[in-house]
Image (tube, rainbow over all chains, first blue to last red):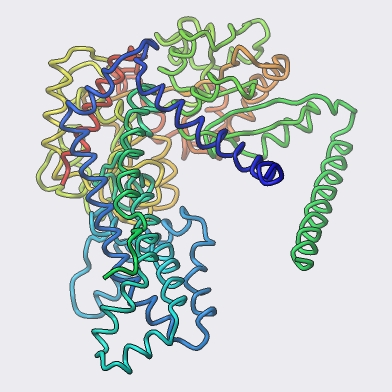
Length: 267
Length: 362
């Protein structure tokens, strides 16, 4: 028993120093005014301002869109991958883009989406006039979804891959159609992967901010933009921390909604 | 497991060899620069891409001082880092209103003018500005204006001569704005003949209202990327600094820069020595070195910004100094306004209104 505690020391130190302490500091800071006195004004400012509420709505709404799109793309992909012969190889191809720096990928998209970029060339080839693709809400969602997709595919793939093939065969043997097998066997058994994927995509999407400027041209303003501004420009760390606290609360809610259900197995 | 250990050992070995190699070249270099002043260093904290790297090498060779060079991308980021005090820099390059703010916060050393042998080379009209009277704490590095860059493929010169021209419905979804509350409110305030440093609520709200009306014309609000977008014909008009404009023009000959009639913002980037600097003597040496007319001219030609050094200006090719938009006549910038530092409360108000302006764009 003593030994086990000993092994836990490095990780618990890490947790306390780099997870616990920053959250406590941020929570404390969010109750401080600019002159470092205790105040609730930051929360009043946040909740009493249409701008911040709108921004919160934007953050949640765009994170929802990004998650939905990645989920729609990822689930069939993962299902398809798990039936392939060299699945580890194909999976590697999907993971590969995550090795490239986020900023580099974003810059690559600037080239693709620009006025005379590849995508517009293609559109012209089809006989349509070139479109303004950069600096639109749609391009922001597209690029964000592209960046997050591997983090959705991976957990779903893992959970589908772990399903015992004999369960699926048994389902067919007992006369279930393809759809019924999918609905009653594959989907419930991959639910944990889907939940993990949603967490892995939704939570970081809440506070995206570089892409909002580079691809969205600041047409999409999320809470991340406001945090950067309060910490750098206005130096109002209190209000910046308050927004951080709001984001953490949003994350906790997401975790709670997507947590593993305990009552598995009962009909 | 064995494989992992071998891989780890391999990485350690490779990085070790690389470090040894780097050290070896460094020693060879310091041996080449001669006398054993190996302990002497100078820590410079400057904007990204804001010096000719050849000049740093030249300075190191001439003085035997090793230069450590770090960069930042906004006044605010620089100020925050200096304020935290974790690293001590010997020279940094704040803009006008940030000099004032750093002075108020007690972050700057008073300059000893007797040690500044190159003070005589500065253009008098650039000196002794309100943000730092008598240049007690700062000397200018580069200067310029806020203005309009346009692409002659899409826009005629006569259509963009004043700030108010930006509101022309013709320019729907054509304009890129620099992502800075002071600059965006600055030109809106100037277009209404108000001060860029106004603290009046009525002026600010009126400027915000006027900016909201600009919304349909705004294509994007971005930062350094604007240079790339403009160079690639992505947008017709950009609002930004003259220095950035000269960089864009170097890449795309269809671009032109205009100092709007009716006034604009005049800005200065300045060399200062932070209070906690550790190598003050080296800092003075560097300031004098970079202001040697020959070096200042080389730097100005490399970066493309306007030099405050009249002797250097004489050394620059006529094709550069004849450009009135970068070396304007006195009457072109007579009514121009320099930013002064705003109180925390007003900074917040500018930025809150600016955030609202950005939010309402759809």
